[in-house]
Length: 146
Image (tube, rainbow, N blue to C red; front, top):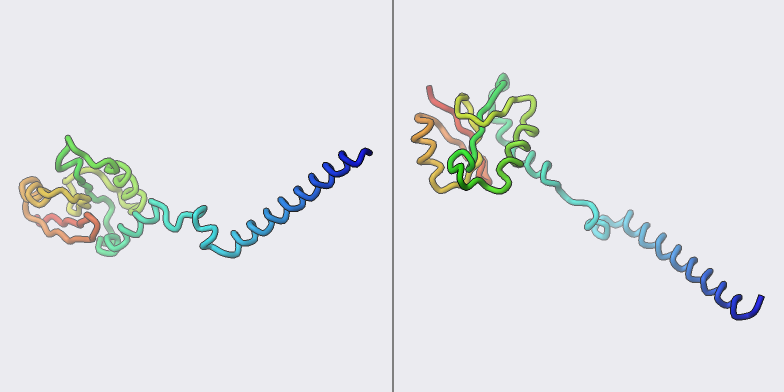
């Protein structure tokens, strides 16, 4: 084999070994140091965040509750719903299962997911006598007084 081809072969072998070593080092660092690999693994996904937001409400509900109403900005002002309105509705259904969550005010208990400035006016006009407990982050638990 001519010396030039032998040199090219040795360089390819050295580069291959170097790449293998780098891959092993970065792989081991990524496995052992979560901060290094943190960009790859989300700390909290949207579903988990929503479940954590709903969790305090679950403790306030009666144990035998089978169904609950749900209203949001899309209910209060249908022509200007929030961009994530339907996602949050479906996440609420998921988070409260097996309780049946339905967009309606025809239930004794209603989840209010709204930061609309006229929410309280709309509730007083549409629902009547009720108590409203703030959960946080635009979530409220409403109990109708019948």
